[in-house]
Image 1 (cartoon, rainbow, N blue to C red):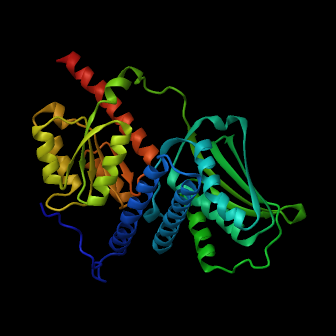
Image 2: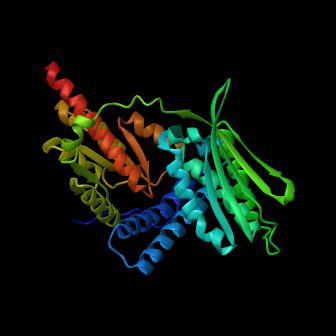
Length: 377
């Protein structure tokens, strides 16, 4: 079967800015998704110590490239609305620990030790845009690392409450003096401008201060929600969820391979189709517990395929969870995905732990919903 691919030539200059940004972002993110996905899988295999260091270096560089891509595209956005934020629930302690480890090598190259401190209340989950928060913290830390050497970089995080709700405060402090070779970098300045815009979108702000002893501080404050601990009880579904069969609708051979390996590693059975029309026919004629649906495919795109699935007369098939996969990260795309009847959205490059959690949560909710339907029948 011949798989059609997207054209290599960019859209005409007369197209809207949003369309050009979407095209650029998708073209850059798609191969980066392959690099990060395969690196993650390789990192989970048995490796020699030096091999593991090489793989982790690839992962760190890829994450840094992803931040730079997002910064570049965000700089070109005409309005804050174009940037967009997407709230989700996640562990802020785990997110910050991952961020610190990602920054540690570049800090070490400047002879900066890195430490992380948490307030006692930081053991809970919060609601905010995890990707945007990581991007903002990375930009602030990278700016301090680039301009300082021979000292320390300390991260301190806390949850603060006031009459308006709760805020996450992340303070970055370096005790090092300004480096002699500190660059006057337009890219760093522009990245900080993006960070300020992101902070405003998340209901907060960015500030810089100098403490005694020439310590340089950068503080990011954003509005967050906290999980109340009343999680849905899905424990009874754990065993059956792990035997689920998942349909993957993806036209990229590299992404097919990567997603298949991830699903296999997570213990799921799966089947691959190459366009939305085949996805619709597969759901119509065979049983699947979930669909991972790429948005940009030949013959029929992912959103149209989902609409046709939701219109099926077979209620069980029509209600199958459908999660969108796309390198198009514009906020309006997320809105369209939900309007098409999809249950969620994951951006490429895929975050493997987030993919695993999304699959698990959607399968558990689906089993509960199917059980209620069976009782009411």
